[in-house]
Amino acid sequence: GAGKGQRKTVITFKGKRKDCWAAVKRREERELEALAEAGDVFKAAEELGFKAVMAYEKLREDYDAGEAKICIDSFPRHPQLGHFIEVEAPSEKEVKRISGELGIESRDVVKETYPEIIGRLQARAKKKR
Image 1: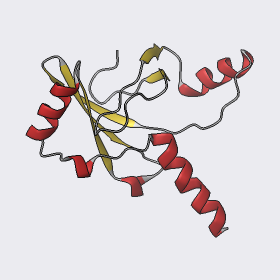
Image 2: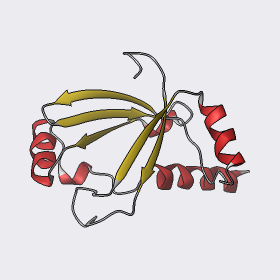
Image 3: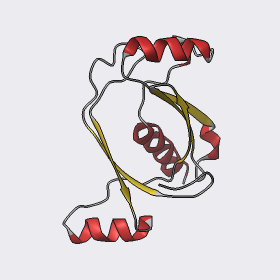
Image 4: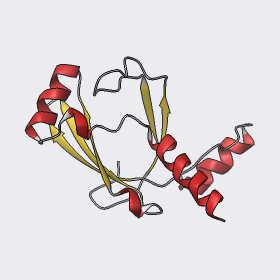
């Protein structure tokens, strides 16, 4: 893996969200770290017949918290979004416990996915043109 401050390309499969009624999003997720640069990964996917629907650059800082992981995400091409904190843990109870320790309340939770948020921004920008 990439060391601190190094960039890496990660391909992520995310299944459909389950039980999104709460402050916790649950879904199947698989990550594959690519040895190639992002542009080469996109080219390979296109050659396999995939078509890009959306692409965005996300910077992530990961912190270990026992069995859980605390992630701080930002989007260099969309700085107006600020930073997002994601808590990944084996149970909803653990997510809520860690979130509470971080001072995150249910009213702070963003239920939209990153593609939904960025898609909304892009749609607004098109309307302004």
